Amino acid sequence: MADHDSASIVTLHQPRPKTAKTPAERAAAYRARKRANLPAVIPAPAPAPASIPSTTSCSTPVTLLPREDVTFPQRTSTPARRQVAPILLTIAALALAEVGVTMNAWYAHSLGSSETAGWLFLALGIAADLVALAAPSVAAGLWQARQRVTALAGWLVWLLTFIFAITASIGFASVNIADVTASRASRITPAVVTAQAALSDAMASRDRECRGGVGKFCREREAAVAQARQAVDLAVGNVTQTADPQTEASIRIVAWASMGKLAGVPTPHIDAMVNTASAATKRNFWEEGRNLKNLGLDGRSTKEIIDYVKH
Image: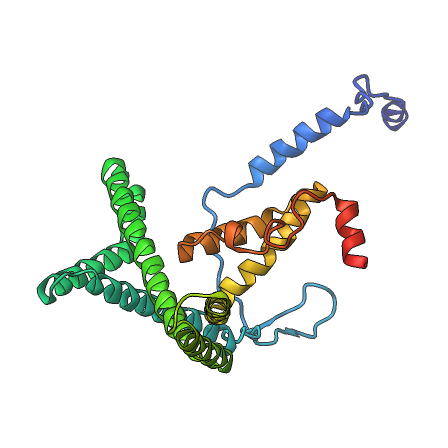
């Protein structure tokens, strides 16, 4: 009976069924378990052995291969041809500087009225050129060092020396061009020889005719002598004009500028060339050149000039 009674006993306190947790609750529980299982001190990682036994059911060890250093191809150095250009530019700059200093020194020496004054001018010219070459870099360095006033003073000194150097270069060119032109103009060409011979004959004839007194034939010989002299002047003038190619070109292009002004076409480049040549040679090519007046076309219109050229 006892067995029958014990079999019929029913537990009064049954466990409550588990309720489903929300995602937030599951995440909080996971973090709590993770903090509880975390050791207080994390041991330092041991060096990796040469072979690590597999944690899987397979008992074959996995062998790690030794680490190989990867080498990347290095860039080759800059070709030598790229280094040639700066060297050539440096050599050219130094050569130009030497030529400029020599020119300015020669011209400065020529300004002296005596030998001592010439050497003093030469030293002054060389010093001015050296200052003009070195002042820009020094002034730029002072400007970067925030020394503004000193840098501006350096640039002012450079400007003065640069103007002096440019003036000396222009003087050198003008003096040499004038000397070469004068030497070429003094040449005796066959045309000049012929004109001088004709003048000598005309003067001899005049002297013979006018020996007995001034008459009709004497006056004719005087007119012949005047014409012969004009021929000599014309021949010498032609030699002078051809002595300097720039002068001859300036005389010719005056006609183009004159025609352009008559037609209402501006010629600024031709005008600049004529003005530059006039300033360099100290001559007025607008008056000496082939303008409309010297060509005998002054006062005519464009149509009349075209008809004149055609016929």
